[in-house]
Length: 308
Length: 265
Image 1 (cartoon, chains in turn brown, green):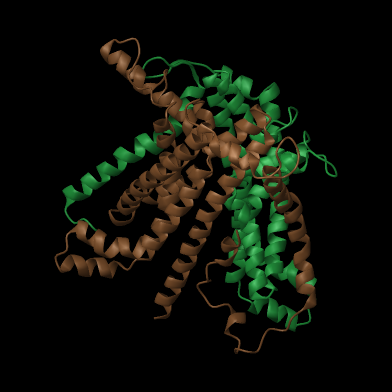
Image 2: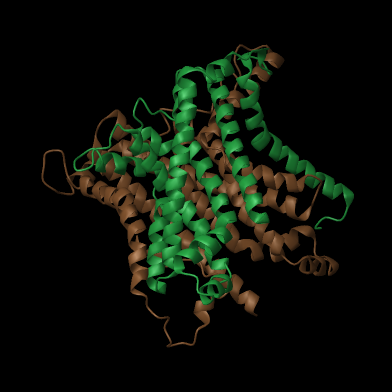
């Protein structure tokens, strides 16, 4: 967990305190640490202490004592293994989909400009402020048993019911997650594209490079750090996504967060829920640490380029 | 400009709209359309009604909206206070300690919201702090989840802040508290209000942690939407979802007006 704390992105401009002569440390004010105490104490009470209790409870079987028996029990369950496979599979698929789709859309907005492109950036911000489960709700009206796609099919063919029935399968969750998380990839990419020098593109084009080659050899390498950062963030959010899966109401699609909810609230098995929670935390904190690391590298890289 | 021929540009735009419209615009449109519909068995919804909205602003649904607004307001104020305080305190710390503090405050981003809910449930269902079943536990959960965003936003603004302002204020003999209140916080106001908007929007739409610990008498709007659609009342759920989106947008608009006022000061 500590690895997440050591990768703060370097600031682009050197902080005035950082350009002091080496060896001459800023005067320590004993009050500084004291001022940091209240927020840290509050965080410890409502976040760190509860989290520690979850870990403690995961090692405390129902029949008393403390052992790794709950882990052995939960890890042996097929439902847990299925949930783990489903979670990682859907998250990986949704991330890949969001990265490909987001890159394509961002490339068109940035480099093939059209009227209304600016309004689109506002639309993305609005889209990002809505909760994820709205997408699943919308998909019910698009591809559900009542809904546009199946209604259209019935109207055209006269059949009683349409062919679209994938919402309660992992594919429905995948579609919803790709839709919801694509803007999270586009935003950092658009920021990266905006900083790209158009001179480079024009030079490449005047030397006869075709658009596909310019994208491959000039644009994407420049934007790769932001793409990686956006992708990693989306991967973490997909692993932890709950609303989208809950709203599909699919009994067949169980991810780790849904398993935590089912075990704790529906089954009342808090120890089992805590075990799944610990696995889920380990998975996403490790990935989040990776994300912070990539972000730190990105900021440092940008700083190097700016200094050169 | 990447594509120079008109035909190539047109086809790129065609690809864009072909992907954008069905994937991103249509979902929001169908929710709005469904909220006015009596039924939807063909390609288009059948019948126009305002009944879903009449239900949405009465009784339980109105309570849920007010609950959501109150929770979002309380959680955002708490999160902004804690996040700003921590970011200001971190600035004065030595480098290593500052990194640890920042990391601690960003950690809730990496922990699944459901697990945050579970952890509060486990921690506060037993003495000394018995909060399970109270509105406070929902507000605490939302605060934990949005504090990271407040801290991140204010922290980023602080590193961009020109230290000359506070140094000259201090050089002119202003006490630290006065510098903080009259110089630093006003300069931070734009990023504070941006963070407030983000916190409110996130809290209004929070479902994962809330599902774990809401008491029956403090049911926020997202939970109400889930309960409604889970019963099979999809159209009533769509109307509630539109109310949620409108309320979120209104809150964002109010906060951004505050921001432009702040920027002119």
